Image (cartoon, rainbow, N blue to C red; front, side, top):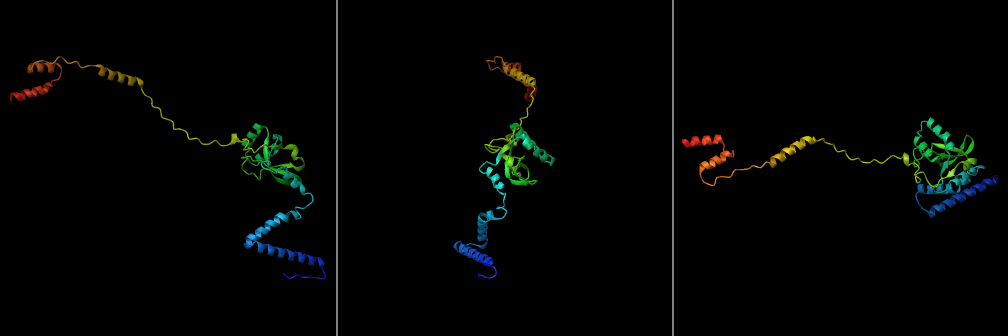
Length: 252
């Protein structure tokens, strides 16, 4: 790029020289890190966000340090969760319920513990007052609730919060409101009523029949047909009708 020098404005000359230097540096950086244009642009944007953005007018504005101070109070793993009193959270819950938000389970669990739990969301200016916003997760602590916020003024936060030793989930503060796992129930076996008296009567009859012994008379010792006929007739072992037919056939 050609340097444009003007005798009338030395500051513009310095600015152009700085721009040229920047472009030269970018070109050299790109040559050392060859890649696609889009990827390189993202890399440059990342460098700008990390090194230049903090120097912008918004970030460097006088009085904005309070945001960083608030954020620093909740840095670290699990540090965003804090306890507050039930009195502190009550107006916010009342407003939620007026907006149609169900706070039943949250109220039940927090009342049982006699304190409420909220999660730091970020610094806010609320009605012109520097504040900290906290999420009130009425549907479960593992679900984000970015629009359900409880506001606390920045200069009084530490007076009303208590650090939690863990998350609501790890402390098992919401177990009562968690849905119970479905358990497969055994099918109920249909009971059949049996008339035991009838069964007993039938059993007695069978036993009586089994107990009755058929006692046969002493069979004849001779081969005399008449003696055997008399014996069989006495035992009921002769079919009289068959005998008549046999006699008729014999007579023929």
